Amino acid sequence: MFIKLAHELFKASHGEYDVFSFHPLQLQAVLDVVWEYARTRSPPVAPEMPDAGIGDKAPHEPNGSLIEKLLHVLQGAYATKNLGGNVLAAATAQLLTSLEKPHHAPRVWHHLVYAYMVENTRAIEVFARVLDEALHGERLGSVSDDGHRWLRATEELFFRDQGFSFISSIQSSVRPDARATRRNAYYRMFGMDLNHGTRDNQPYPYVKPEATNRDFVSTLEGLLREVWRGYVNARNTSGANTTDDAVIADLALRLQQMLGDRRIGGNLSREEYVAVCTMTWFHLTLATPDSPIVVDFKANATTPEERLRRLGERVGIAPHSKARSLFLLSEPLSRLLVEVERGTYSTAGNAPLLYDPSRPENVTADTLDIVNHWSMATGKDLKAVPVSTATR
Image (cartoon, rainbow, N blue to C red):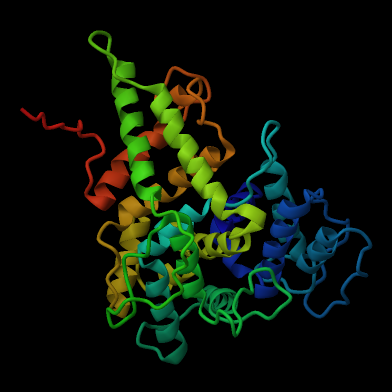
């Protein structure tokens, strides 16, 4: 979600990394605005009022929806680098408006699988150690003003219990560990744990529920293999066509049903939102070449995975060896599963949208990326033709 917000700031002639410069309260208000919009579909309209400078009297609280009141917080007194609250309010409203689709309810944030893939890179482990080093000493070097703003916002938003009033506050005496809460959500939705444990290489403790999609991986891989077969056959001009649209549709339907089962009654919605927002913050930090903490700690590089590797070297934590594929999987796999859950590919007539570039609204580019990088990240060759052994 922070990546989309950064894009809106960039379109308004600000730097993408400027999202790191706002007050943590304003950024927290953005999270609540987006959540409330997704829940109520209330129009994201900000009341007209001028920015207030530091120390100025705040404008009167407007009447109206909760969204308007939260946008009022964004327009408050905190401003740095000529970035007033109105700038953030306008970017937030534009983000929500741009997500409207005529044929679908808007999907404001990524699927939970996005958070799972980004967290598997060990990015949050590296950044937790970066905060630890930067806030307890000077071993990593001096920190710029922008870097200090990043450190404060990161600590406030993602490493502190924020109190009962914020949507992202999912820590309590019942579930005191945010990392364990995310792992619980991943396991319930995908039947998968993260690929790393505790700092001392022990299994990470979290609650593993009985209700979990244990067949998610095998079903997804089956779908991707059939989609690859369809893509190969769509390019053939001669020979047998072994594409089976009915099988593709059946596998998509099975995924739709198992993912839907975990969401009954709104289950995992808030956990998904918080996990995705958390990971977009760290993904954006790595994806932006001139993000302050990357520059301050001399981790400049041409790709997010290389910046993560260099930061990891500074703090003694090695990222996942397949971090590149995990980053490149995160967004297209999220888009695919969003549409799978909507039932877009659960009929044989729509199955070709997954593999046939000649079809309108095809998503072939995404599915090819998923096939390639899932194979590289897992070591499973999804392009291999299954071999059956005949018995005599």
